[in-house]
Image 1: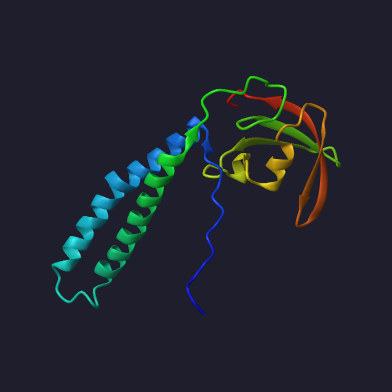
Image 2: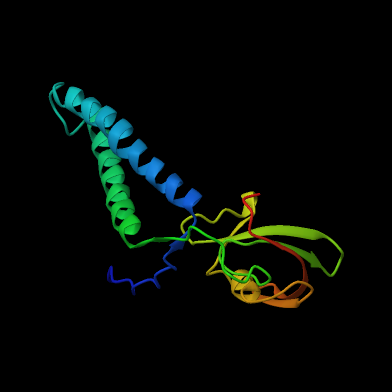
Length: 167
């Protein structure tokens, strides 16, 4: 069995200003705070002699590779992202950055914000614009019926509110 993996479909390149700040903060944390500490720990562990049985050295080097890999990814990704600074001209429809309140068939309300794939967090109510639900929502208006097809089956929601404010 080979190591070949087919290329993954690239996610959308849109991101909210808050999402960009989060990625930049992570990059700063990794590069300016964590990496120097781990580098120093590896340097000190290397002074102790035999590196083949030195756990601090082995695990420190592994952590450095993880940090460097994530830093490379973040640098590339931040270069290609497009920050969406303002709401769309037509705020009556659902587009990127919208806070959407939906009502399901049982009468329960759900509130989601449509964000880029780099910042989605379902527990915080942030839904990736590449997800099936968000794709079903894009372009809909107030009181529209939304049919979402998922592996668990079809679900119907009704749009009860659209807001482009930050909360």
